Length: 146
Length: 170
Image (tube, rainbow over the protein chains, first blue to last red):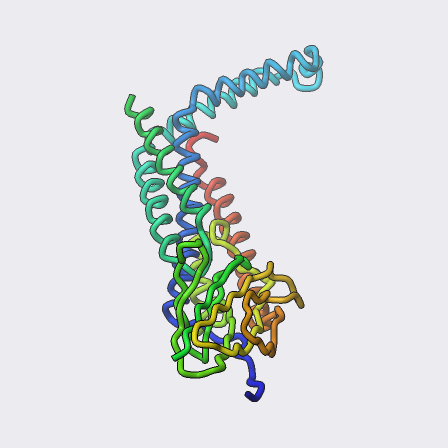
């Protein structure tokens, strides 16, 4: 049989292309679901965030044996202000929690669907993680309602 | 009639497209967990070709790529691979009445082999090497540049919005 020219770099057929872009869309939705989940967590962990900031301030003072006040006299006040800001930010996140939850859940669920539609690559990790995020979001919703 | 039981093992990082005598075959998972199919033909010799499709070789690649980059705000959109290793793999197989031919995909690397054969049938290899699809690579570079520009644009817009409106906090 004569040696034929290899089909090199052909354009993908429509079905394959749709699958590839489905996987791409799944990845984008997966990333959005991560952001929504993180913001939901931040909203619910408002008091933890402010407590951590105050703790960091205290540790800073202890580690430097108070010398931090010599070059930053308002160190503690600034840290308390930052803690206050963190509480305000968290309050804002709590106010929009239902929207964040809805967006996060929708994105994670759609990511699973779009990942599953793409058979040009393996997306086992993405599908598993999206499913885990759905579970975490559900737990966060229960925590919010309580 | 000759029946070719064809199976595939290994995962090179993408799902390869396998063609037998120019006809694309559908591979399904068998009970051994490998992708396989049964191909019936009257021919005594069949030609097997392995392909890989790149999104960037499609028509309208730029606008579609740009659309998805904008959808993902640049940051969340997955970047295009710039390795663009395309398998140039083509071989003939001499068939008996019932033949089993398997290929094991090796990890893709430039100039490396695409597959290893798992068969007792006669095989005539024409090509079995990874090449760089230069067109796909060039286009992937263009999209990577667009992605960088979009990320910069999104960051600058974000900073400007925070400066102008703030978050009601600062």
